[in-house]
Length: 379
Image 1 (tube, rainbow, N blue to C red):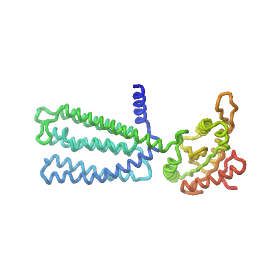
Image 2 (tube, rainbow, N blue to C red):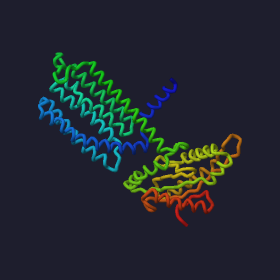
Image 3 (cartoon, one colour):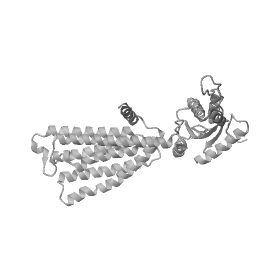
Image 4 (spheres, rainbow, N blue to C red):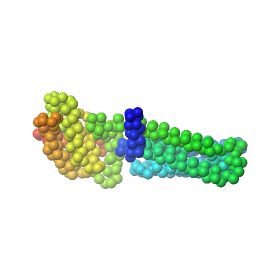
């Protein structure tokens, strides 16, 4: 039982936590996918009320409600798609589009009430779009958004039901030959189904986040890995370009690190790596990106020109050198140092591979000229 409680607490914590940079980037791609799906479905849905009107299956009120709802969906879908295609990431867009999807469903149900209270409460075709809207939030990779969508759908549908039951003066107003009779028990069942769907989609989001973390995070240090850096760098470069800023990419390689593995073992080597990462993290600023590329090699992306980046990396080098690693209490401390090479975007290249190659050349120069130094320009 304790294990189940712990898992549930972790599940709830992750769903409520703001997504990190990787989750936001994946979520932005999901928002674009949802926007495209919404645009396509909007045109397909336009055929439904038209076909039903032609077949004389809708009353005039139902047909008008269906057409108005679909027209609003088409117009909004095109606007949201236009915003989702922008390079700039609008963090409010998923919340706005989700609110729109849920509220439009409630609006169409409300319009159906002008023809039949039972139609507004029992129209499964329209009501099902609550579940579709909640399901689409899973593509945004933000558990908070899924919980919000479920809560908003339950609130709006519940409020509509309370309003219509309070306005009904006779049982006949809650009955319809096409939709049957609206009962409180039916409304409660649908609210429960919305809640269950929300929990299921939240579980999907949680699982997706765990998979993304495993694929983009280094298991030993908890740092982003090369895969994440490759995926994220174009967005970092675009943001720097729009702000008129430079980016610097630094390669960091620990000096003589293999001696620790050879003399003390890999467990000590892992501890030494985590020690160095802790020292480096203590000197980072909010928008710095420290990445473990593999082994004892790291990359650091700084939103600063190369001169300022050299000063920052030199300060980190001194901090690492001044913080020796102690494997076990009583053992002699081991002095840790690193060599570094820095390249500058866009002067040294516009692609990550180009910048890493140039930084590696300067790192090699630092190694060849005595190690424990940072090189930003070839001599």
